[in-house]
Length: 83
Image 1 (tube, helix red, strand yellow):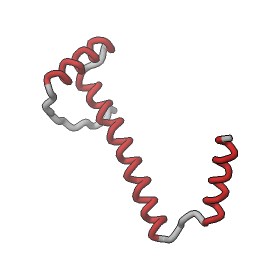
Image 2 (image 1 turned 90 degrees about the horizontal axis):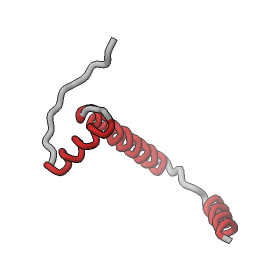
Image 3 (image 1 turned 180 degrees about the vertical axis):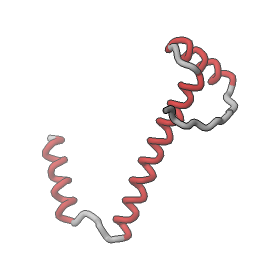
Image 4 (image 1 turned 120 degrees about the vertical axis):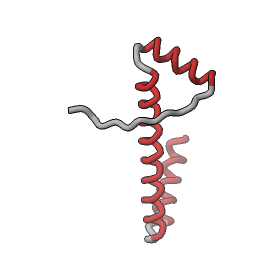
């Protein structure tokens, strides 16, 4: 059973289109496959960053910050390691 797939068309600048075509030829992949992989990578990266930001906001709203002692301990560790 295959994965359901949606259709989408997009316009690319001529130079980018030529680069994609050359990459497709060099790798033996289709332009659609390469474009899909690039979009997948972008969406996964952006989704991760958004999730991390939302979590950080929740922690900040809950007052979950590092204590002065924790910050000093980390600073001391960095100073020792920077040596």
